[in-house]
Picture 1 (tube, rainbow, N blue to C red):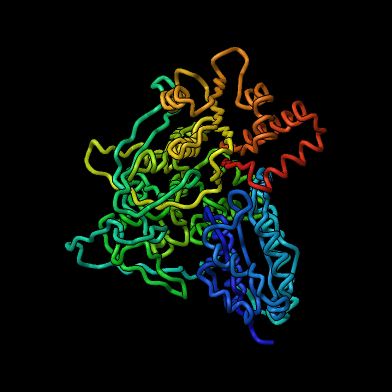
Picture 2 (picture 1 turned 60 degrees about the vertical axis):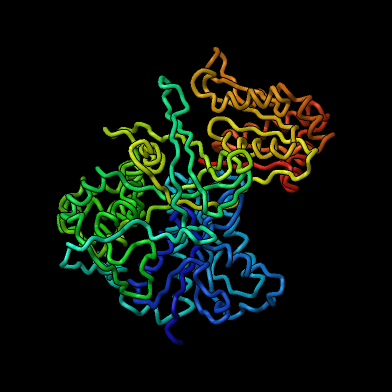
Length: 593
């Protein structure tokens, strides 16, 4: 039997599925197997009928949706016109990456597995359902699943078992090589070359939006810094509706960039051209030639908590015995508890790990930088304004993430800290951004009441919805807003009061820390059971929830109690009504961790 080529296709939103796909590639390379890897949407899906061995690695996003880089593949694969046995020559396996605290756990992987079976493909093993909530994270499932996958592959191609694999401590070739240029006098324009006349702005062609204002909206005595930020999108042709999201990529801090270059003895001004060693394309986001400074500031995710693969690769450079033993332990299945204690629990960054392993860091070969460090991923924010109220403008509400762990330095969110640091008073600031359809959809009918529950920054999409609905003459709007204190973090208070005066809004507030007993939005939902039941049962109201992931479940439970109390339903009937509303789009939620 001929040597198969393994194809690894991934759908990744935050980079975890991509990292896992590359881990499978490294395992294949060590087994001296021909292997190719790419995002699902970069692959010509019509070639699937002639592939022999494929592994699909896919995450699930939002409310059970496929990641952005597999949406075209997803649409194609679920075409009704595809013949039932069209993939009968394909041997494949599906590995899902999910989080069981979300209701649609690994929905995409399960559905893909079923669809491939339906199209006649031979599934080598059951779908892998990795769970971020497991004590040892996703690897607890991935490790066992991969062992099982290679056993099945060897059974299918017995001659593969005869191949002597590369040893674990032998570095694999890098994905790219750096070719440094001697002449550093010529200046490189590294501002993202973004054609502003581009009619559709996307991740590949973001729009450089000018920052207009960046205001703190929490009281200075409040522990949390929350920003209301506005961008000018004049001339972009960007359009959005209530519920849509804006994406942007943050930059690393100047201090981190400087420290990184010092640790690796790199000249930030040095210019290089990147060349691929295999069939991987050079990242389109990097200018050619590029400076080290641009690469580190804009591309390498040095401030993220590194994944296990980082330690795996780092261990192959280690010549210091102590450091090598520790890195090998961190990259082994048995060492995952240790790694969690060292890295994940205190949220230690990749840059901080390099500081802890000075001998190994000194041995690092620059060619491996893009193998070691993933690309900085885009961050998404709910749009907090409507074009009908603020033409040519786009606004967001951002909580600046900062917290303490056992480490001396406070932990900071990369994007929120970067955004908070941008000051238009110091000179013009441009942020490349693009807009995506969100998961929340609001009713077109003028008379349909809308009930919105959005505590904290969860209120952002509802501000957009209220501005849009009021402009369209839709005035039956209920908002439940919650925060800690009426005087410290009551976002957009004056706007809500103005809408109430005009009869366009009914507002219910819960200030959790302003009295002895903590009061949350779910308490207010229960207190207004009669009103809510009337709007939902008699006036076909739509119900929306946005916020951090524990809150939506509590609000959902309160709503089911409303159905029981006011509608006289049993617990089972209330659950059925809740699910029916979800299915028809009358109940929608947007949650994040």
